[in-house]
Image 1 (cartoon, one colour):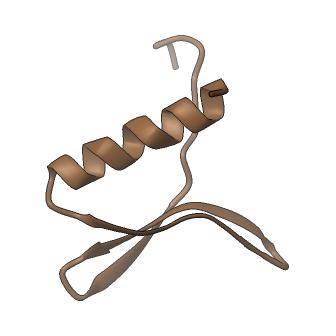
Image 2 (tube, rainbow, N blue to C red):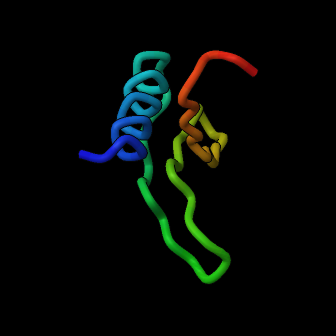
Length: 57
């Protein structure tokens, strides 16, 4: 598993632990890709996961 996929898996676990449901992963469309699509009650949330190499901003 590459670093990007590992970061997406970590983000998915984080969101699921907080009660959100994963609806889709790596959804591709003409405009690009959405890493995660999750449901929070009746609300759909579109998530772009970014990986940083350090904790510094």
